[in-house]
Length: 242
View (cartoon, rainbow, N blue to C red):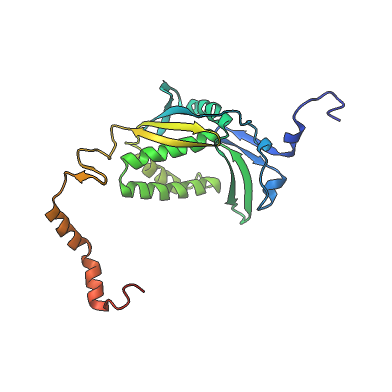
């Protein structure tokens, strides 16, 4: 009927449910109703048309993206402009399988170039500026927070408590992250931050340290293994490697 009425468009894309938002685009079709079928390339709304490589930089301030290739932008505009740059590379295409609050598993394709790049760039920056335990609890808290949002629990009071921790964890997450785009993938190539904990004045990984002596290492090793030494003195060593 539409064809007879003079409406012209890509009819093959009408076979798919496409829902676009700032953070990405979901793609559903007959393939996502199964566990094994693959979405064809033409199901994704942005055609893959780039080749070679392209480099870009994303600036962060206290965890929020605030610049793209040196241009200062509002966070939402960083997302929008990055999507325009990266989506034609075929970056951010994948299929997600998740659980609904009623216990049913769902499978959906998505195209989220900006989201994928920002998440990886942000994590790379966090690894440079946060401590081991800050990283651990940030990941745990972020997982819980995301699950509660997904399950319509945003107004649950504990969310404000989680937000307090998440906001505190981002105070030093500022710097610039370099990205290289290539067809269907990307790589984080470097990080610059005034809060980088890989400060060579303390130590160089795999090379040397300036913070302790060999004698101090010997004492630290004995203390670190003390509880295991006590356990084996009580329980014996016959099952040590079993």
